[in-house]
Length: 614
Image (tube, rainbow, N blue to C red; front, side, top):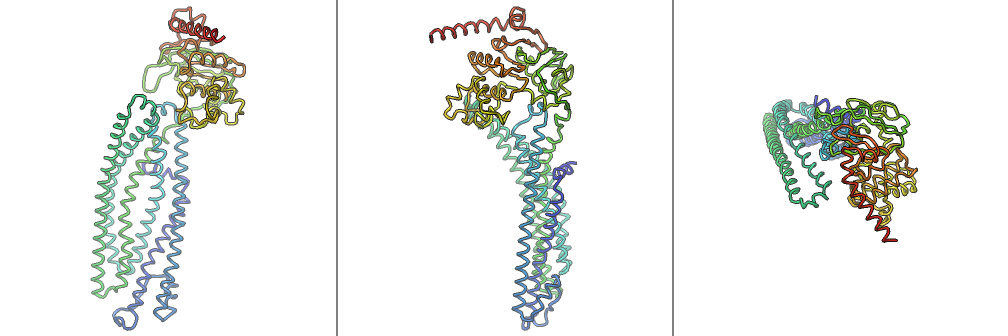
């Protein structure tokens, strides 16, 4: 089954592979004729007057008849030698030309196959559900898309064509050798069963070791990826020594696994070399004995030694094929492990309605696959199109889960969610996600310019629209302080910006995309109260009138909302306006009693500052 899946990854390249296989086999047939030129030359030399007269006849050489006829057109020995040399040169030029196209086609197939496999694997990873990505290691996925793809395609093209090369070499080498001395063929091929058995034992051993190598390399890659991504945190805690030690441990484990594999490889190759050289010695001894008995001549011995190489060294190369087969099998298992995972779009809706922004939760319950306890329990609320709604709750109460259900990152198991009266499960996932703009607490920025990061969701957005979105997100003032303004390059993941600036870039990005539903998942946590207030006031602008859902821990952010939903331990504790909830006993009132005092002090300080400025 594993082997079938390995070769299944090469689907679509059979015709090109057959062409390359034919070129490989034909090339080996032309090569099998090369030693026969030497055999004919020596026979012609021995047949000349004055050189051991009558001891050896010219005899038959298994070259094509048209070449023999060409050689025998002249009775002058030096001209015969010239004809042999000229014919051999033409053959070699033809062989080298053939070899060039063979290798070019082989490389082309491998690169095209790798390109297709990488795209398919990368695309499938994009289509896997949110739960998979939450539990996956980035370093491991990177290795599967790069190293594992290279190992698999390298075997499916390079090593499989080597199998064709080996088979053709054995066949044509044996065919030519049997015409000279059949005994040498059987002695040479007698070692094949021994090589096959030893190669099988070698494969069983090396397969397990290569699997361990892949796993240890994956762990090492994960450490590298995490360290590079978290470079700021590492430095903030002066944790470089610990990270180096952790990397050293994983690196040592990887090196030890490679050393273990190299020991087995060295023993195997050493043994195969010993067997190959021993066969040569046996063949030389047989040749000498045959010449002494008069059953062979010197030309046959010389040609036989060249042809024996066509039988011995390809069999030796079986170890390399087995070696790479083990790697490819492990690599293809890791690739197919991802490809076998079901796409999240296998369970998808078909409708693509024009979304106005009405949202309704009806007794929605949800639990993660690794637990029996529901995180959300019969949650019900209704948001009208154009409303601004805030969701307040303790950490772990299920606020972000509500957003993930709305985006269909997770599938709820009870109740229903309606968008403009249509069940969410009946709406296409890509369509609904395209209708919702989300700003996360820790937004991801690309290593592009500020302008490109804002406009990335709406690539054809006019510059005025981007500028207006930046103004609304209270970002324009900061951008004007940058030396290159909107063309300033943002570092990887936005490392050159502060936390508040990154959040405001993300807010501007969502505003540019102009979605009917906007979600702010604690997206103002990294900005100060004054900036928070400026952004909230700007969002009330008619140009950006959408259904807005704000998840926040700040009462000051929530209190301006048309409706506030208080979530506690997976239940809806209360729904209402700030005025009503601040007077009603419960979680919201407790939070307001604490945060409200701070807001009053902040407003007083702000007013005093404005008075001083006046």
